[in-house]
Image 1 (cartoon, rainbow, N blue to C red):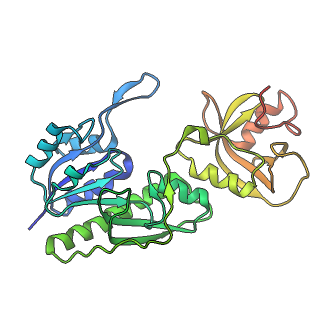
Image 2 (spheres, rainbow, N blue to C red; image 1 turned 180 degrees about the vertical axis):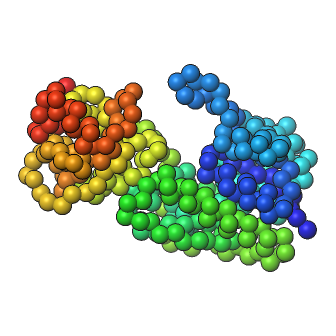
Length: 317
């Protein structure tokens, strides 16, 4: 018999699982998502990706500012869900909410728990240079991502993997793993195993203040930062005193002896910059208010103003 599901999610990552639940034939009693937020240059109120998809599917949408409100709790209880599925919802579920669904609350988490509990597991895995990540389908409890795990799926991290593409892949993997878990819950055969006590790490929320590139760090570390911060907050530096976003970069072998942040030159591939260890080639960059361009194109335009070699990134003019 199909399960009655309440779904809670907000960003694009949570859309595939919503669609998969519907396609599997379960009853979606309601979709919870965060309230509309100002976005864009006009700061107009904008619906979340999950809300837009839910409305397109003709589903009921709930947007409480908090789930600690007694009225919100009563509304959820009235839906009488068998299970509540959570994917990057963005609001904490208090113990009273966790107790509502007959089969509990199930979370789609984008890491191999207990590695990278917390808000930004994909980006932290990339920053750390992890070679593998994955999806954990977890039964939620009061602790931060501490609940027992129904299923895990491992996903390798390629050497040039970026957060944006990896997020999309893990969203699809998570949707498939969730459907299998819901089927097991429906049949009464689901088993959740406690997480290991060893190997716990925490993925704190991303902060815009992490975006600046510290050129004294090794090139390999800076390259991971660039890949981890696409599409947000995007790694950045200063170019001739102006903010310059770096959307893509690669490590270049060799040592220049130049001070970290020094522009060594440019070629058809991009702009080479000295770092604390090795060199970093900037492949895609963006000045404030401009479009993203290739590093070589940017270098040609900027060279008309003054020679590039010897410029120092990160300095205010």
